[in-house]
Image (cartoon, rainbow, N blue to C red; front, side, top):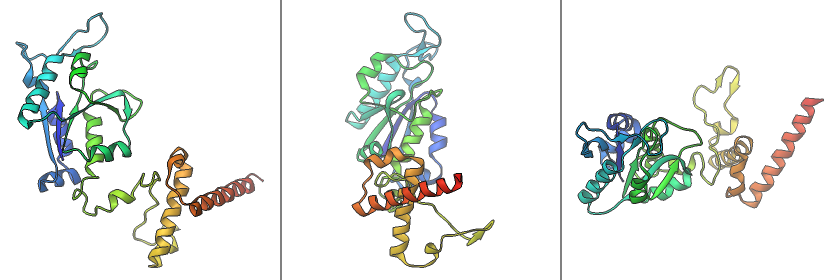
Length: 253
């Protein structure tokens, strides 16, 4: 996977992405990440890439020409026109399903806006996807781009030491991940569940699956609408929910 980030702050994204798992994957040649400084493509005498908005209003708007020129130079270098993702709170909210789709691409371009945004004409010309990481406003698109790159990269074969972990953690089958434990067996009077110490892999797998289902119901019940549950698991969930209601009644008495 090759990531190309169009930004006004290349040091910000490169410093953040060249560490930990992503950094190791870059060093192994599994991932390629470059930050393209949009300022390098302005023809303004003093290097400006922004100007006041037509019609008035607060703040400045990034000009269309440097943004488009940066992308066109990249396309010429690659010999193709890769998919361009624009980071904006107006976009579709990024999720694991979108990440899986994007992980199939060979090249991805992340366009990071700043100030009050980017001249709409540049977006019309080069952007293919409008994406958001949530319903709030950030200073620029660099942090959302880094979040998405981290998520997408985990789905690229070879990035994780254990590729299986990319599929069994949170949001696998639209369920949250089960609780995790490590040594010691007892901490502050709290014991590790006995099943995890049993060495019985089938029972451990069943316990983890059931815990994922219960945790999803408790914390993100909306995910269960599209979760991939067997009929047996649906019955388990209903039984567990019934027990929870009974326990809540007993506490209220």
